[in-house]
Image (cartoon, rainbow, N blue to C red; front, side, top):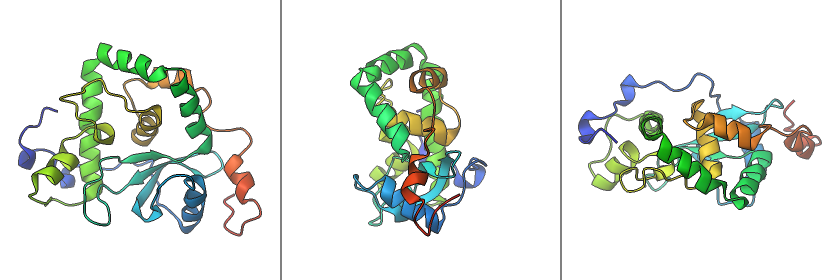
Length: 206
């Protein structure tokens, strides 16, 4: 990151959130509980839906940068779509993480910009101009990159394709957008898996 002095770094009041995000609804709460049923997940931490499929179901959510206990939580976007979750897992089994890390190494400037934009957006979501003086909290919220990646020690780190896909769809841009599009293929299922699961539920989303 280029900003070394946190107090002069990103200022929430000067930042804006993506217009394509949408508010989380009560219906979304039930859907997210089902989508994330096999993972540790607190639906109350969701502050917005960053991307929905054609059926209206959440694909990527925006998580508040702090836990209920007040600890910093650096992962802003979570991939909740079962279809994309499975597809990312398939690609990871094909060793695509290493391929994306090589691509990151070839394009350092846009990758660095992605991490900086992510940190700025995370701070904006926090909606506070006065972050705790605790160094760890300041550093985590203001300085760490995508999903908490320390770009000083690991500038080409990918972590996982779920994280990178969620970041792309949540921010609406990504330095490896072409690669992700090519590898992932369709970004939603044709069958409407989530819709089928909820078609007999009174919280059905049309």
